[in-house]
Length: 115
Length: 116
Image (tube, rainbow over all chains, first blue to last red):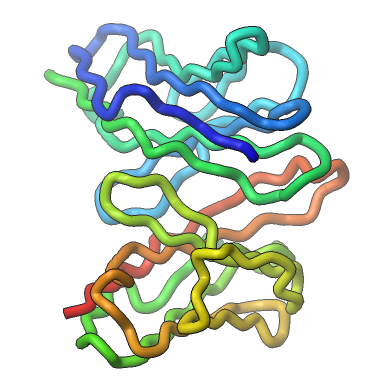
């Protein structure tokens, strides 16, 4: 079975500071990893994904994520946080091949960026 | 707007009533998914269609829930005899079919159901 852990319910950061939202995963075989963002009363918006290749993936709105196979992690990062980045962030995983095509989502991390 | 759309955005109903939600996927996407999201949780998978065929259903999908995608375009999710525990955000997503299965899901804005 596949699973995702987002160990922090909430991350607080000052505007202009770097941010990290943590994600670890468990999946059979090679992972296909995603990050989504959700604003209040809205659906999920795709940020970025990792399939293969370079461990640092760049996505929308200046976000990037670092894949670490040995630590089974896929942490979301941004060099300089904006107040408008405040939202819920979800990490998701599914097997790259075989198994179900349905991603499993983490519980989400609330990012709060203070002015 | 060429994104995924859902209707209605909000639904308030009384316990025991039936409700139906609609999802219109991105037009060229042949895969469509329904998820349920409760407060403080990530989306939980309910069911998945490839064209008009319902290929996978979660154990979360009790027999009070039924989903259809009759012409392989829009989909409906019906909940019969609603219970207060059905109160949640119901999310629809769609994705294209790509070689190697490396597709990305795109989500609609959701339908928030409140059962009184």
